[in-house]
Length: 307
Image (cartoon, rainbow, N blue to C red; front, side, top):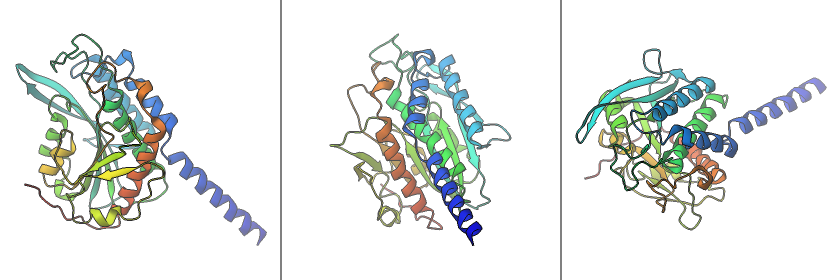
């Protein structure tokens, strides 16, 4: 009996340690943002060495977490696109997979690219590094934290997971457009898509916005009972918008979109890592985990179109 009691205590302690290890970590969030938004990546522009380094960083992290390569044995989905007078611009999506042997898949995404020196964006601050800490190093940090959670929580979930770091978002959502045109599996098998873009500048007065509330009939039920843990949130019905969830919504996939709102540093060289609130972001990701877990209680979500 004593041995059983000791084993029970040990299992409880091991479970608590695992939960702590896979919980969103402000320290890891800060480390990701600090690297991706450092001057040495020079703004992660499309077709730049910094952009390539960012993609390689995500690939390395996917491998470390234990995600499987999703594209014929590799993590990259290459594509080309045009913007204005610039043709054959090359970029890539970085994809990692958790195969739970399920028939349907939860897709979680965030874009890793930013404006570089503004070469292709025609911005207001040419030749200055746009580090893009909030936009969207913060979202990539969230992507990696959610990947770590669902890979390491010790639960075989009833859905597979596909994690996508999109390229080419700043120049017209090109990575998500390409993926929805050439998905690895039928989009009809996608349970929903959750997108994180600019989740690092939490304002307690505003709260974090969660878009896409009107894109599935079941979202109101899924949101019931979600605890905010001190992070205020509000919902918006639209599935459309200026980030990668838009591509999935118009392709017929229910979506959620997490966003902490605009600020004075948006698309400016002043969007730097010290301004990201990693502790609040960890709280936002805990809300995301609750929503994902609640959504997995439904075998299928009912897509709702919006005119």
